[in-house]
Amino acid sequence: AEVEIQMGDWEASSSGVAGGRHRSPQQPQHQSPPVPPPASAHATRISQVAPVQGAAASSVVNWKPGDGGFSGRLWKLLFLAHLLVVLVLITVLAVRGFVDRRSRRRFRPAHWHVPLLAATGVSAATASAWLAAALRCPRRAIKASLWFAPLLTCAVSVLLFDTGTAVGLAFAVLGLILTLVLSLYACWVTPRVDYAGEVLAAAVSATEGVAGAMAGFAAAALAGGGAWSAVWTLGVGGVAAARPRLAGLYVVMLLLSLAWTMQVVRNALAVAVAGFAYMRLGRGADIDPGEAWGNAWTVSLGSVCLGSAVVPAIGAIRDAARAVNLAAGGTDEFLFSCASCCGGVADRLIAYGNRWGLVQVGVYAKGFVAASADTWAAFVALGMEPVIDADLTSSFCFLSGLAGGAVSALVGGIWVRAVDEDYVTGVTLYAFVIGYFVVRIAMAWPQACVSALHVAYAENPQVQQQLGSPITRRLRSLLQS
Image 1 (cartoon, one colour):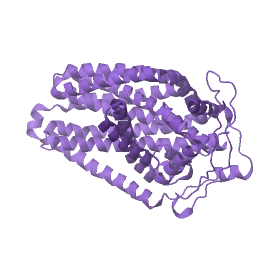
Image 2 (image 1 turned 90 degrees about the vertical axis):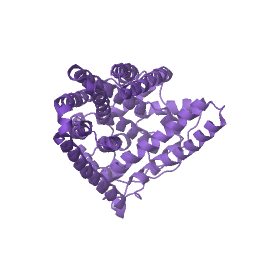
Image 3 (image 1 turned 30 degrees about the vertical axis):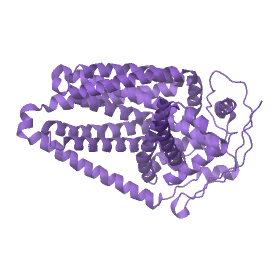
Image 4 (image 1 turned 90 degrees about the horizontal axis):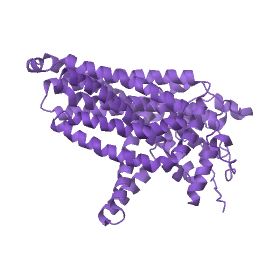
């Protein structure tokens, strides 16, 4: 029996933009999505998008963002102040490590920093290659991530085992457990790879014709992330050299700072790409890619900073709740109740803080919370939660980051092992972290395109049937199962 998918009325309003400086175009009402044509092996890429006619196109192309609101300015200020404080901390730690007489006798800066800098450069090269594979051969790239991530993680675990240190052994055990989990996950999601590749191929077609500009933005983001990572290594190097009493606290602070900073760089690129991709997929109109990139770093930066801090935390809570629920298996009442409680909290939070909200941040310059709420309301109205939960794009980007981090860790770890075995554990772990975040910056491009396709489909299921038909088929199959 055919399942009818009814979409509720939904209007993309500009209530989230401070001061009402921007009025978003009225969203048309739609009925159930069309019956898609017979399924093909892969979605046909669309090189040209039908133009929007009349005043609608004019209002879209002449779009001007608002000022981001008070909360946006506050989060932007907090982020910039955080960068200043961390830069001062890195300077103090680095100087203290270099001038300390005891550290000068036992710490060799060249043996520490050169392998880390080399690993950072390798991570940028790996990110570029992985991005090219994702754009040109989406299905093969997804398959490669499923198998390279566990294999390379296992190789890093073996390298850490060889160090013989307590920290190295602890992380080696965690790495082997992660390898096993990733291998089982790869077997579990293999039937969904074709659909994920089809959606990814359809989504990245939105940036055809401006790939050069987008590649320039991605290169700038990678350069910025790599440069900050190089500066960041001075801080952890200073901790390793001086070994202060609060060394653990300094390392945790530096890691949290690196995570937030790299997330901001990644999400700024995602906002720029998603804004352009949504205009093409949902409105059939083009905006200036340079303007989208500039707005991501100016009027939308506050929302990007907030989203970069909130989305990973909400995602971690949600994933932890699912993991506990699977581990309980419905037999352990305590674990089941804990998982249900955490899952309920995460489901409520995700409605006000999710990565799909970055699309409306890029399009309408809304505040992040308002953009997330409006986007999630559109998903709920169309019943798209099963499609969102079954999407492999975020997993693909995560696995790509793990694989890239493992490559960087192997380069840095093997290098430093050849010159000074005392630094193998620290250099390997820090190189892994840097490589992971650098690759995730590059993967913001395809992930933003998929998010834009989902949001465009939620607002109008009939948008470009060749692009939206994979989602329609997936949604109907999930509802029928």
